[in-house]
Structures are given as C-alpha cells and as structure tokens.
Image 1 (cartoon, rainbow, N blue to C red):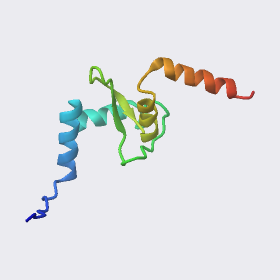
Image 2 (image 1 turned 45 degrees about the horizontal axis):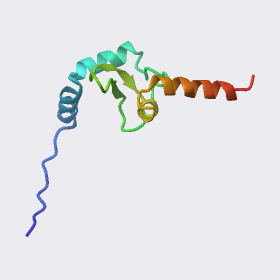
Image 3 (image 1 turned 90 degrees about the horizontal axis):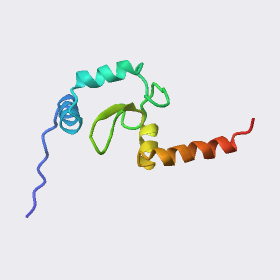
Image 4 (image 1 turned 60 degrees about the horizontal axis):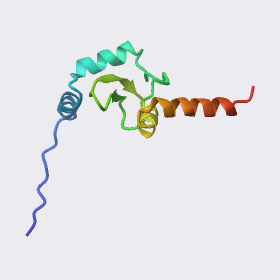
Length: 102
C-alpha cells in the first residue's frame, strides 16, 4: 500500500538561498550585487525582463563552475544550445552578418 504524503511547503526564499549557495556558491546578496553591476539587466542582450521562471539565470563556466554573470532565459538557452562554444557562436555571427541586407 502506497501513501502519498504531502511535503511541507518550503519557504521559497529559503529554497532559493539554498539553491544559489549549493549550486553556484552565491548568496542572495551576491546575486543581487551581480545583477546591480549589470544595470539590473541581462549581461548579453540588456533586457530588464528575465522571462522564463521569473529571475535571471546564473551563467557559469561548466568546466570551472565560475559564475560569469546573469542572463535572461533566452540568452541562457542560446549559450546552452551552442554549448558555450566560441567557434560555433562566431560562425553563427558570420552567418547572420551574411544575411543582413544593407
């Protein structure tokens, strides 16, 4: 017989604080400081709307886990889809530049 026990609701601030610290080594204050240093916008496209789940995503180097900045949902997905590969990103820029009509 299986029982479905309901988990107690965890305060979202506590959950966020734990996730930032355990995943990226950041406090909420450090996150806020990074965001402020970026002008409260995405480090790439400069939008002030994070989209996605409501907050800017922590962008980090997957090899070193070093935090690079905070990104909107779209820029975070774009970097992820390009697997942080600079050569591929440069090829994408060249491709887009070829199709731009003056």
